[in-house]
Image 1 (cartoon, rainbow, N blue to C red):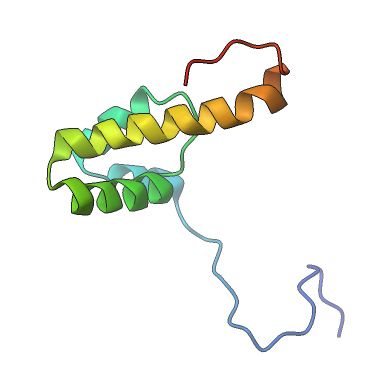
Image 2 (cartoon, rainbow, N blue to C red; image 1 turned 60 degrees about the vertical axis):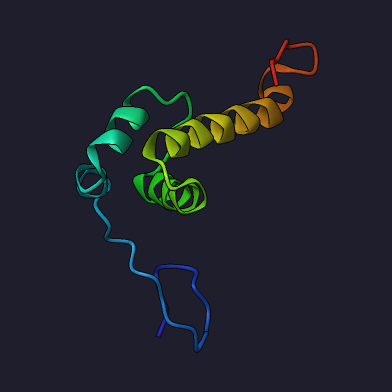
Length: 93
């Protein structure tokens, strides 16, 4: 039997790819939906929620957790700037 997808033979459980990005976004807390609406990078709702929950566990404060998301996004932009725009592009970081 030939498969149309290149998944090979494995005993590992397959991941389901039938997630709804809009449903994931709608299920976020309102402060995260607000943060994502002004985010510079194309974040997935799951990624933002995971990072936010970790930051909230560390800080215990929603506004500080959102500030950590801003800092994380800044680090990711700084890291990627040279790859995207070249080494001469000015970055703050």
